[in-house]
Image 1 (cartoon, one colour):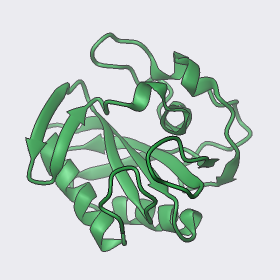
Image 2: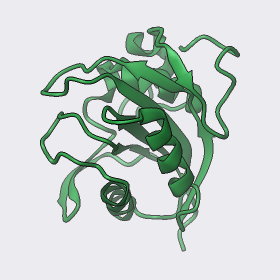
Image 3: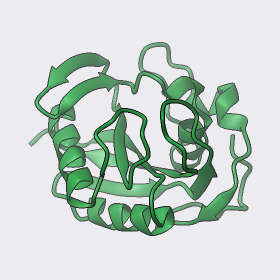
Image 4: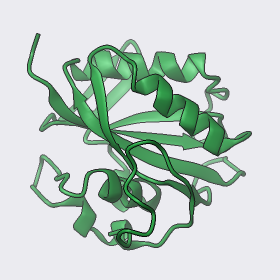
Length: 179
């Protein structure tokens, strides 16, 4: 089995009780073979940014390590989404649960997989506060494998978002400011 690789996973929910859904997803991810979650951001309330979503989102990022290949980890995330009630297959629509693989070590790729497209690092994360703020809390030293820039130094990582909950392994919500 290959040595563990650092990973970051984004969680989002805009239907139902988002805090409860992300708490359940976090618990499910902590027991998956080949994945070890070591840090979790607080849960943040965020407005929908684009697309057709209407509801407010709850977002978080989990950081850890995985011995799974990127495609296998993506498959695991997509299966868990379905099991926990992802809902709409429409892109950028409201959904009960959205799990995105943001980073998998230094992997840079853009490939089609049976579980859907896999682009690493996640293609739209650099400008999205709802991703970068929690990423900066869960994994402050995370760097873009293409240019080495630290994600926590990007402007979108310095936006203040309301904290609506915490997950196990989350840094205290008041310990540092986001970014």
